[in-house]
Length: 294
Picture 1 (cartoon, rainbow, N blue to C red):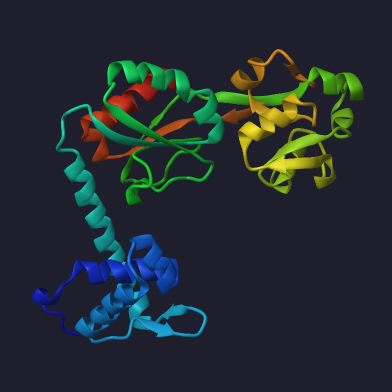
Picture 2 (spheres, rainbow, N blue to C red; picture 1 turned 30 degrees about the vertical axis):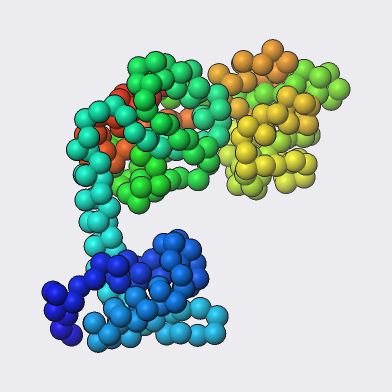
């Protein structure tokens, strides 16, 4: 296989990479903001330049050929390098202006970030802050966020992480709900009550059992992927929820229904790309978040 340097076209390489990751031309075209025919021509042009077939085209999807699988590794390395160049370039600006994208869970974004951002607006009033309030982990290397607040240590060595203060999560329920069903006096009593689930309840059963509370999915009449909605359901008497102690204690209508329950430990990590840490506007936001949370 011979590929002349003059024949290299990054647009074709990117078209192949995104198509391989998305699994179809239509999805890749949407991701790149191109028309499907344009994207198809770019992929075909790359196949011609390389002299190989990269995809088997079926009626349902595109499947990578063996050559495509082998080359995908190298093109991903190229994609990471392109992202690194973009990251390094953003670090050239030393003015505390511009756009900073922060990723955090909806609970963290709603109840912990606002007072910190208010202070930030006074220190750097020209910054534009965008917040992704999601429980999905953002990929910083692909620039899905500049800074992420996570509850687990990142494993990617290309990222820089700072561990902030840990906290704990406790059981909370509305006083109205407990007045109606009675306050549990044992782990067995607790197992008879209704819980508000976060994400998929079945994923929490083992964790609860390790603390002496034997639940089934029947204990969870309501569940949600939103921690802020879970809090509201708990406040309105739908059942017992597990909340960060700072959040639960902020509402006088809530109380811990069973203090003998062993709290859950919650780690908090502040994460950014190594090159982004040298960017002044990112560093200002990073340091202020570290101070405010940690």
